[in-house]
Image (tube, rainbow, N blue to C red; front, side, top):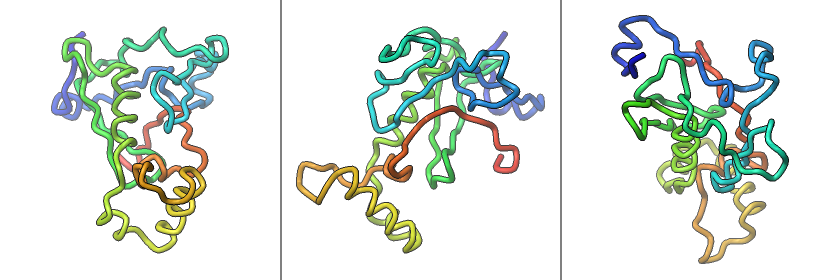
Length: 170
């Protein structure tokens, strides 16, 4: 079938189904035997692991598979109440967004620094939490550290273990 853009998805009332590799582990995905992706988002995308592969094996099968059915041209992702939205655009418009497109877009988005003006807009509690995470992860401040990064939002456990559609948030 065709690769659908957001206008057609909305107009036709289609809710794309997520590829099971990207889906958070839930009962409705049991038929996929738990075959999904796991990744510590502070690590390179070469460290993404498909749980059905042997340990310490980088993910290869399914990288170029469509991320959704029907295939879509782009999508937006919000993670764990973070203030940032990750825009994912298909690297090949004829194929649509792939599983790899999603992982690469997440890495690019989370690898950006938190700007001072963003930090100052966070609540005092969030500022303290981020500062504590920064010092735990990066040690004391030094000139070789890039600074507070978006991935630091996730604290000591920046694990990707799947996506899910939150109808209340949408």
